Image 1 (cartoon, rainbow, N blue to C red):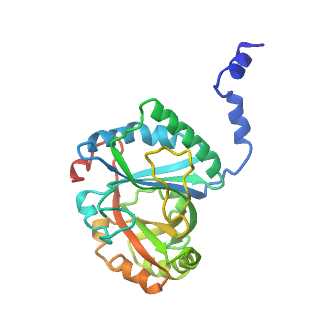
Image 2: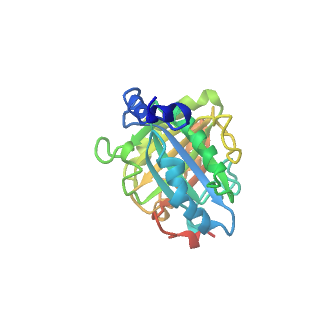
Image 3: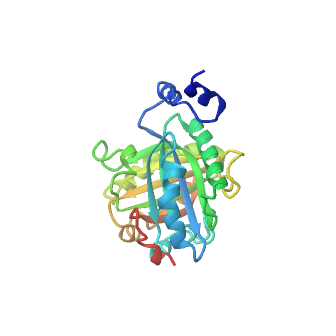
Length: 289
């Protein structure tokens, strides 16, 4: 037996040839069929350390280096942005200002199961190796399935698979709960075909992506709570070409609660604006509290 053959049969290191076999089969399109959306609150006094850990290690080792994640971006809510959130009594964030960092990742359509196997395994390894920052709280963390994308300008402009790479000025995370599992499909159809096209017209938002949360696996890390609203919830990401501090007071976001409530299909549980972080820096950390 050769040295290489002995190594691949007696230790857990994967043979490089296996990667070629995996690459030759299965879906490999560019559509963001799934997403990881995670809103986190570093504990008071740990803001700088958390930011450096996430950017310098976890964003890469705990996300971007994994199979089938093809785009990612971090967002931050400074205190003035946190104070623009609503409703005050939110089923997502208590208090509604909790969760000053948001990370968003696109996963290749049809590769959810493969990615989940890897992410559970790597996070167990990172935790065992002391590379998981514990002084933080997951406020809203869920893997999600893509349901629809609505564009302001039709076929012009960036597509949803460009959204996390395009230099958008801001993002609004909106969470809507349908009035029961049987109403979610109707809520999605109303949003996709009637409500969002009207709201996007002439607005500072170039597109809205809509996702449905999926339950986390039973062997997830203990510090991440199970996803709520799996059967009723929709998560919307509004990609803005304008600073959200200017966009949110405008007509397109001013009455989100009332507009959804009037449909009789659901209720808005969170509207939260963010701006992009500046990778490799601690910009905005001093403005979180």
